Length: 114
Length: 206
Image 1 (cartoon, each protein chain N blue to C red):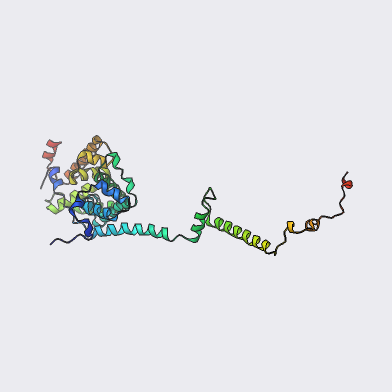
Image 2 (cartoon, chains in turn orange, red):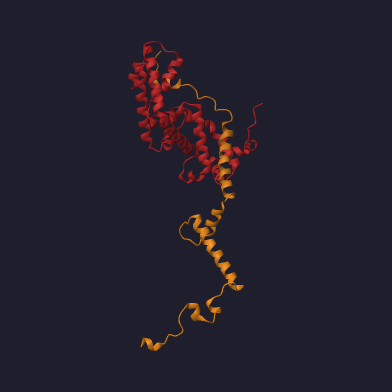
């Protein structure tokens, strides 16, 4: 059996029926993709929260531990401040004897340097 | 009674009046219904195009699914302001994905084709049944370079005009015509060598 090319091309077998449920699978896959993105938004980790909180403070991206360290330092500052307020820590301003606080001898005289 | 579409909200007549481009715009707003409608409207068309490239039902389905999911994820990649129809643009997406898929499996297919050719060699002078002709034709088309194969499929089997097919393949119309001419020349040599073509007729038509 011989043919012209166009005749032979027209004898190419037909495309089979589209698999049953293909459209449903496509739509489900797209919906699944969206759900993944939605979950990512809802389940932000604690580290992620810190990073977001400090985003404005650091011009370049910082790792979560750096943000956490900043929070610890800040908290420590508040604690020390509270301790000072209730008198657990004595500051220089509250201590009249400045020399003893600084461990400098009181016998110093200007003449020794002249 | 025909089966109801699995997403009933998609099947009304008024929905048919919404253009593809408008549906894509709605998809970019996260509209599930618009996406489902676009899938329902064109999946058969693109499955056919993918199947013609891949000759495999499962791979064709995966390719069409990948293309649609990419559309869902990044609908803004389609830019109607460039004056390209959605179907033309999406043919390009599907065709490129199908070509990628072909490249992934190339070594395996080549060896299969060689095996089939070796089996068929003793039958070259015999009269071939129509089924054998179809098999030989599929194999010959499969041996064409990717872009020649895509051009042939789009113009001859998917019914696209030369201009549309050129847009799909991102070439000029002249370049597309050249791809088609080379594809037909290669097929004539391949199939003619197997005794499947009327050589006299082919010489006349060039």
